Length: 170
Image 1: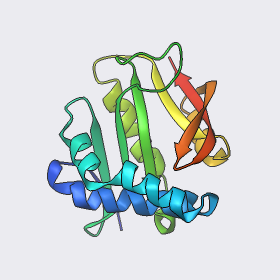
Image 2: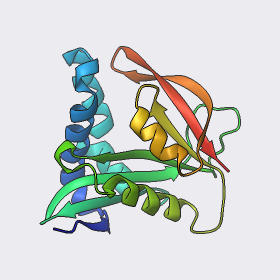
Image 3: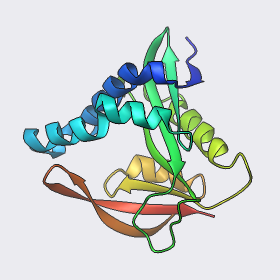
Image 4: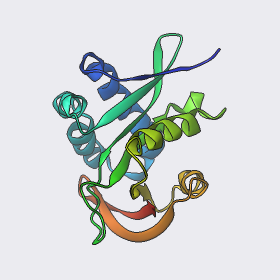
């Protein structure tokens, strides 16, 4: 079965909100107290925030679907990372997730390529990614696309603070 990729629209908010919470939980839930995870999921993947992101003309999200079911997504837009050299006009990959039972086979790479191509549709510019310091698989994927570590910050998940690496290309 071949997965299909399409640009998400406002009508996808429910699907994207649920998929975002599910993929984040699959990947990271074991790291946090339940109250921190619940607080973060409500903030980061709540329906209203998802709708605002989908309606924002400076942002884009793509859904990866298999047999009509969303199995992964990527979201990108203007850079908002806390780095002295980061600018709003630079691009940032905000999120890239694939459900655990659908990982492999180049699905993450397809989402990444699509988001990076969109970010540079008007020509090359600096691109940024924030990635958890212990997510070695993602760091390897991003390094293969030319991203290098240029900084760190603490990423809040409820009351928990994760060490996040800031990566840049260009």
